[in-house]
Amino acid sequence: MSHTVLEMLASKWVYLVVGALKPGRRRYGELQRKVEGITPKMLTQTLRILERDGLVRREIFPVIPPRVEYELTDLGRNLSDLLNQIRVWAERHAPEIRDSRAQSLAGGDEPAEFRA
Image (cartoon, rainbow, N blue to C red; front, top):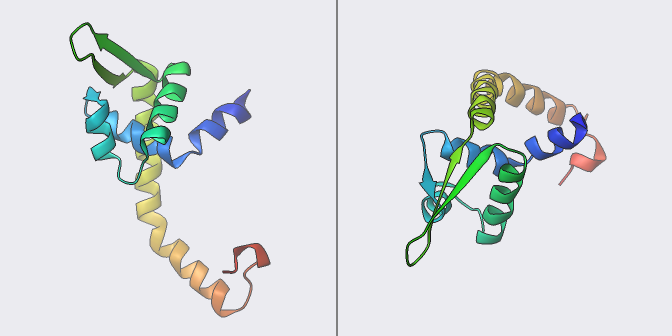
């Protein structure tokens, strides 16, 4: 079961949508503007996955036109905190990783699947 959760978490869109919802409730259009580069189809799929997995709550308001808002659940907020820790780690260690990549490229150690 953990591998299916890890697959979901590996999606950059999950990471970005959860981050966009961290400050609080947002409407679909707000999310689309906040998450640069996401297509409407991918945003809808990502929100459905997050809702299915109990990370996002969707509320539909009975008005015309219908208004829908999304927010993180307690579980989603917990995940958001973890993803923030990963972001901080990545920012802290990005120079080391960049240097290591440069050394690897300079030495011709790059595996074939990573060559452009």
